[in-house]
Length: 364
Image 1 (cartoon, helix red, strand yellow):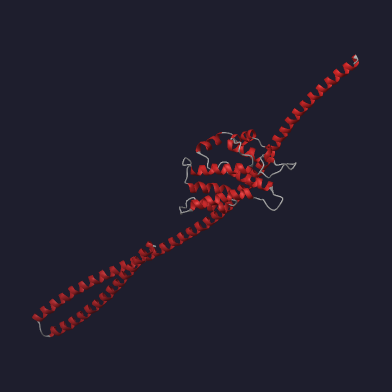
Image 2 (tube, one colour; image 1 turned 180 degrees about the horizontal axis):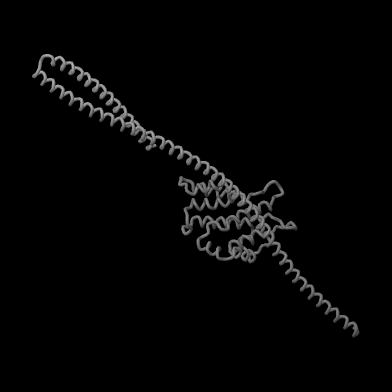
């Protein structure tokens, strides 16, 4: 081989080495870019909802999840799908329900978990009332309801074909977002209040699992539901305030009416008391007059007896006539006294009736 051929062979070998180097470098860069795109897609879309969710090229997404990646994002290499995380989250909640270090009975904690999954304000109010219910078998019913709630999340929506993976992902996402802070211990609550919520472990794992898009939609829907319940509660509060004002005004009017009735009865009682006092004074006057007439009668009787002893003739007839007149006067006075006593008795009866009515109204 000539010198020129040898030079060409060396140059071809060098070109081949350069091509291999560029190919390897390009492959490494391509792999890095592909992984970066995969991580960005994973951050946006989150974990696959189940083992049947395909990617854009109709390949099963869960096959792309490796142990290291899963442990980094959600804290466990066994979690490859959102269904797996939902199962783990359910086990954590059941453990917290049975944990005596967290305040509340098991029934109260079950109701607290179910309240976060309740779709309406009425259902939440029903569960709030069940917290204080001590009926036998209630705990088993609530645990069964909780199992049904999580089972429905795994099934929603599966049929008809094609399966709505996005709808199922959103349903699971809303449930997981609602359950982030439920049954937290006092230390966890204090730590979350003092630190940035996005730095919280449970929040970060939920965000990594669901992805930014699903997390945003779930938070938006949850905020809309909370706003709807707040508006409904505000309307109910306003209706209760209006009813309270009406009821309060009704009671005030009733009290004013009772006060007027009481004042009328007091005035009537005072009038009857004055009449009774007047009749009593008249009766006393009549008794004094009777005593005076009795004294005059006795005096006249004494004078008559003396006159009889002194002169039994002419004066006897005149004395007898005068005595008859005086007796007639006494009889008339007794008649007047009897009428006065009758009026006093009627006044006393009226006073007693008024006192009885007053005591009866006071008792009401």
